[in-house]
Image 1 (cartoon, rainbow, N blue to C red):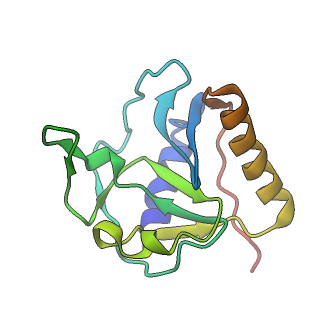
Image 2 (image 1 turned 135 degrees about the vertical axis):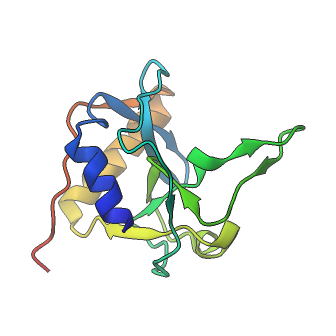
Length: 146
């Protein structure tokens, strides 16, 4: 379900012009531009995200819970553990803690070849080096032949 959900957002071209903005143990993006403007989610709703129990290994792509986080004062954050939306991340390393934190982060895809992981690593390095978001001109979903 999560892959179909994200694929529909890609098909609507909503991610085009958005950016990866995080680079620590993951690179993360959602419906926000390099200028910090939010793009409306064309599906207009969140989804239940824990249908997958695949591990958050290097290259695993997972739904972030960020879309449904609510501030509860003094920096704490609360949300329903099964919620998600347009935000997703790609693991830069094995992140075992993400398998259980807040009910687990649903892995819905995998970057499964070295050339593609080189691109992921280059995005991470650019975010770190420039301290700026990295623009995604055109988002695509490509299914593996496996």
